[in-house]
Each structure stands twice: as C-alpha cells, then as structure tokens.
Length: 434
Image (cartoon, rainbow, N blue to C red; front, side):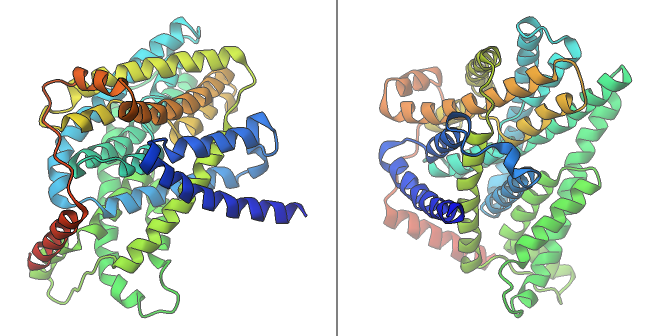
C-alpha cells in the first residue's frame, strides 16, 4: 500500500511541477519556491520523510542533477555570447565571492563566536551562488542571452571558489596554518585543467556521436559520457562541474570548433546534438530539478531557533550585499531589468550544504553551528530569491531596484513570437553558412 502511495505521489508531483511552471508565467511565483515548500511540509513539518532515509543516494542524486543542469545549459551558450560574457563573469564572480565570504565570516566571528578560521570557513562555504537554483530560474525570466550567460558562468565559477577555498581552510585548521600559494595554484589548476578536459571530451564525443546514433537505444550515451567526464575530472582533483559545463558548451558549438578541426583533419566529421536529443535532455533536467528542490526542502534542519535566526540574519546580509556587488561588478551596458534580476540572484544550494557538513563530520568545534546555520541560509536564500523575483514584477519593489540601477542600458523591447522564431531561423542559417 505504501509503495502505491509513493508512486501516486511521484506522478502527482510531476503534474504539479508542470502546473507550477504555468503559474509562474502568469503570477511570477517561481516553481522553485513551491517545490521547496512541498519538501518542507514532507520533511521538517510533517516528518513523513527525512534526509537520512535517502542515505548515500541523496548526495549522488543532487550531484547528478547538477551535472545535467550544467551540461544542458552549456549547450545553449554560443561562443560569441561566451566571449563577451567571460570578462564580466570573472569580475562579478570574484567580487561576489570575496565580499560575501569576508562579510559572512565577520558576522560568524562577531555573532556566532566561531573564531577566525571557522568563521572564514563558513564565509567561504557561502561565498558562491548555486548553479542548480540560478540556471533553471534565470532561464524562465526575460533576460538577454548575455546576462543569462554571465549568471550561468558566475554560479559555476563561484562553486569552484567555494569548494577549493573551503577545503583548503579545512586542511589548514587541521595543519595549523593556511598556505596562500598552494591555494591559488589549486584554484587556477582546477579551472584550467577541468576546462581542458571538458573541451577535449567535447571534441572526441562530437566525432563519435554520429556513429553512436547507429546503435540501438543510444539516446542516453551522451549523458553517460558527461558522467564519465565529470567523474574522471573529479578523481584527478579538478572541478567536474566546470568540465561538464565546458563539455556542454563544446557540443553546443560544433559549427565553430568543427570548422577549425576540418581544416586540419578533413576526415573528422563532428556533429552536435539534434533537436530530438536536446528535447530529451530538457525533459530530464525538468524532472531532476523537480525532485531536487523537494529534496532541498526536506533536508532543512529547523530544530534550533538560534541557528535559524543566525541563518536568517546571514541570508539578509547576503542579499543586501548582492545589490552593491552587482552595482559595481556588472557593466552599465547591461540592460537595467537584467541588472535588477541579477541583484536578487543570491541563492545557496548543493555545494554550500555539502561543504557545511564537513566540519561536524571531522569533529571540529562549532561544526554543528556551521552546518545547521548554513542549512537555514540555503532555505532562506532560495526563498528570498523566489519572493524578490515575484515582488520585482508585482509591487513597488521593482521600482526601488530600477532606481538603484539608474544609468544602466535601456531594456530591449519585447519581441513577438513570430519575430523571435524568425531571428532564430536566421541565426541557424548563418551558423550553417559559417
């Protein structure tokens, strides 16, 4: 009987997720928020399901979700958009991480009484925004491709910053000191070698893909190769997330790199994903995203009021900082509406939750405060992002944000559906000609 109830609930949840997306288009209430609320009701409120019941499957599921989201979003990034977005991305990502990590560390030191090293650890854990939240949500908003690319890349880069710096600080707490040189070297190598592995994987797979399509039931072979690239990169000590993103970018720009390869190696015949495969991956990402946000909701710890209050304070601080960070870190050629959207994109997610659990697992004093306060920050930051997106569209809050970003470029006029399809068709023809 219980199995039947679970299966029926999964079916209802998938139908509900489609309904929530339709509601977002009309009410601007993000489906992300509604899915998290479902998780909260199932977990912390009703205690019907707990995170512990998932065992090791939970972290694996969230990682698989992240890999699919990064890969699928990478296939949508075009080289010309990427070129213009890279500079702005690293400025924004670095500024966001450094400022947020320092201010959160100061709050943890003064309010949480964690000590310098543990405070810096918490600051680094919460320094980057979550790609698993930012990418699906920004894709639903009316933003330019350039602005979306900056957010996509910022979230991926910020995750790497958080992971490398937090782990270095954790090692430093055990060793008694933190060495800056190796830390910078780890950051650079994590970016560079992960990107190289992702790019090489894209070149290899784009030349194998046409042959793979001749096999029976081959649709999922691309996903299997993404997992392979991610796993190998992680085992080598680099960022699997960056490798998955670059792999997606490579497959999405076969016309560009395929033309370069064809000049030197005429026998090669690289191909990209076709429309059927893109639709397939889009459906997978939708399903994984649905269950991911429910899982985030039921994973939140709400046992200690002090931890929740501290987490709420830190989340409010981060959103206040985000306005200033975007104001100084995003170029004024960015459309004003896009800058306003970027200023509320400060959610934390998978990386923060995983990293925050490490001090407690390793018996470091104050680890329970770091873990549970971070869980609260994850909850509140996702809620604030979702609510502020709604308030920007429906209330005076939007006018306040637009006043803050006075001086930025005018928003592009909304295009009709016919005009959008016409432009997309023209781009396809130009890409084929190139």
